[in-house]
Length: 526
Image (cartoon, rainbow, N blue to C red; front, side, top):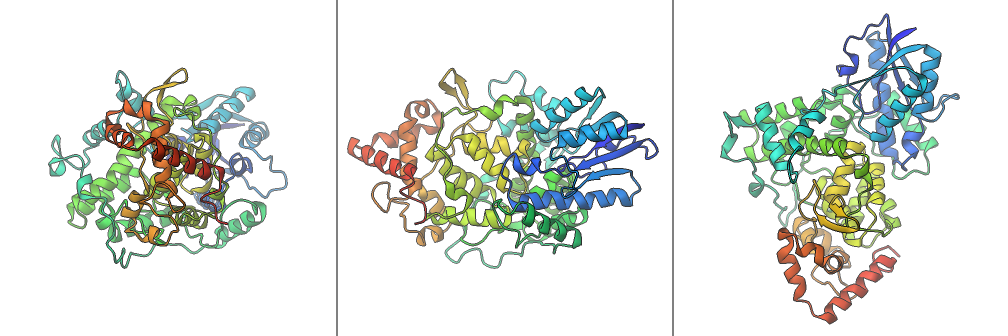
C-alpha cells in the first residue's frame, strides 16, 4: 500500500512544489496522466496540446532520473481511459493508495473532478498551498474583503510593499508606482527595425515523438506544428528568461503595445507559457528584471512595466478566479449572444489586423497582449459575441492558456462581461476593468504605424459605407446599443457625448452596416 500518491498535473511541472514536501520514495509515488479529455473538452490547438505533452514527458524523465517512483500514463497507450478522473480511479485501486496529495490546481473543473474521485474512492485528498505564487488565495481574499470595488493597482502596490520589489523603503523606486506615460509607444514609419530573434529550441526525440502523435491523433484540430520551438524543460525556460532580460527587456515597456504586420515576437518576453507550466518561478523572473534595472541594463519604466504584469496582473487574476468561481465563468453582463465568427479558427478574413493576429496565433499558439485585448478581443466585444465562446477560443488556441489566468482576462478585460448585475440589469463594472476597452480602427492604425491599415481594404476613418472599417462601425454601434449603461460610467462620458453628435440618419447607417457585419456579409474572406 502506498502512503501517498502525489498528483502532478500538466501545469504543475515543478519538483520543488508543496506536493513533494516530505516525499519518501520508499512509501510514496508520483502519478501523471496524458488524457484526450484535456485536449477535447475545448478544441485545443495543436501547439497547445504539443507543448503540454512535451513538457510533461520531459518532466517525467527528470523524476525518473532522480529516482522517484512514477506511474505515468501516455496518451497513446492502448488502455488509456481518456479522462483524468478515470485514470485516477484506476490508479487508486490498482496501487492501493492510502491518500492523495496535490498542490493547488489551476482549473476549477479539474480540481472538482479530482475531489470527486477522492470522495468516491474514500481516500483523503491533501490539497497543499501552491507556493508558486507570491500571494495565496487567502491573502487575496483578505485584501478584497470589505472593499466596495476591486482594483489591480491597489493590490499591486500592496504586493510591491510586501515583497520589497522596486522599493526604496516604503516608497516606490523612482518616486512613482506607474510608468505608463513613458511606455506604450508605436513604432515609427520605418518599423521595429532589427528585433532580437525569438529564443527557440529544436525538438529533440521526445518532443518530435509528441509532434508526430499530435499531428496524427488531433489532425482536425486548429493550427500547425511546423514552427514548434517552445521551451519544454526548465533548463530551456531559464535560457529563454536570460535571453529576454539581456536582449528585449530594455525596450519592452516602450513598445509593449506596438503592432507591426508579420512581426509576432517583437520585444515581448514569451515567458508566460513556461511560467504557467511552472517551469519558471515568478520570483526568479521578477528578481532577474529588477537586477537588470539595478545593474543599469534596463530602464526603470521598462522594468516596472514588465514586473507589473507578473507581480500585479498575474497574481490579481488568480485571486479573482479562485475567489469568484464557479459562477464567474457564466457571467455575461452585457447579454452578448452573437456567435464567434468561423474565421477565428482559420484567419480567413479581409481585416488585415485580424488576419495577421489570428494567423500567427494558429501558426505559433501565441500573440502578444495587445493583439489579444485590442484586436481579437476588441472585435469580439464590439460584435457582441457570447463571452463563453470567446473564452473557449482563447483557452483553445494559446499555449499559455490555463483557465485561472485566461478566464478573468477574457471575460473581464476583453469582454467586459464580469460586471455586477441586478436581475437582467447591469448596474456596475466588474473586478477586472472599470470600463470596456473599446476603440475604433484608428487605435489599431496608430499602434500599427498605419501598416496594417495601409494594406487593408477597409478605412479606419470611416464608420459608414462599403469601405468603413468594421472596428469603427462596430465601435459606434456598441456605444448606441449600450448607451444607457455607459453613460453611468464616468470614464465613458466623453465617448457617450461623442455619440450624441451623430444624427439619426448616421446612427441608422451605422446600425445597418453593423447588421451586415454580424451577418457575415462583411469581413469574411470571399
